[in-house]
Image (cartoon, rainbow, N blue to C red; front, side):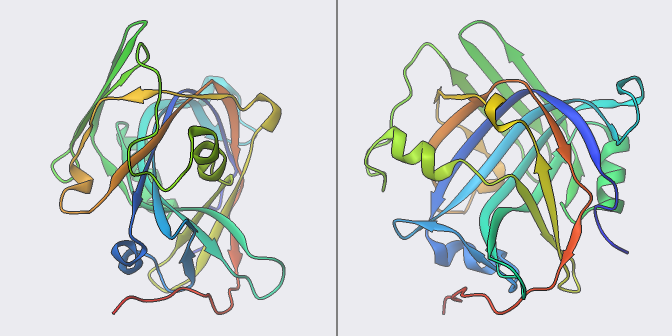
Length: 247
C-alpha cells in the first residue's frame, strides 16, 4: 500500500519549531539506510514541531468537514538520493503525537509517521506559552517566554542567530521509509512569501523523548498562521546514499 495516498489541506494557526543538535553518530542508528543525515559544522539536528492544525481534510473538501487537533512530531533533517534527479532534503519523522483519536488512527493507517495518541495542552498569555504533552512514552513540558530575547546558547556551532536560523529552516518535505525500505516523499505546498517566523526564548524544556539522548538546544521558531497543503506522497526510487554508519 502506498503511504500518504491523499492530498491533505489545513491551516496551522499555532506553531513552534524547536531545534536540537546532536552528534551524527548518536542519530545514525535511527536513520533508515536509504537516507543520510544533513549536518552543519559536523553536527546533526532534530526538529521538533508543536502545532495546532485547523480544519485538516482531504483536498478538495470544504473546511466545514475538517478536523482540528494538536500535533507534536520529532523529526530529523535528512537527505535522499534518488536514482534520477538531484538529491533533496526534508524531515524524517521518528515519532508523532496527536490529541485526536481519529487523526491518530488515520495517521497509523495511511502514513509511516509513527502516530501515537496523547493529551496535548497549551496555555498562553501575552508573554508566555506553556506546552504539556501527557504521554507514557514521551511526556513533555516546555515554556516559551517572549519577554526574554532569543539568544544563541554558549558552545553553539553557529556564529550567530542569523546563521542558525538560515541553516535550520527546514525544506518543506516530509520523508518516510516503510519497514520494507520504500521511501515516500510528501511535498509541502505553502506560500513562502507568507511564511513568517520569529526566534523566541524557551526555558529549559523537559522532553521525555530525549531522555538518555545527548542533545543540546539550538534555536526555537514561533511561526505565524499559514495555510498548508500536504501533497499526495510519491514513491522514490533511491540510489546509494553517502551516509556513514558509526562503529
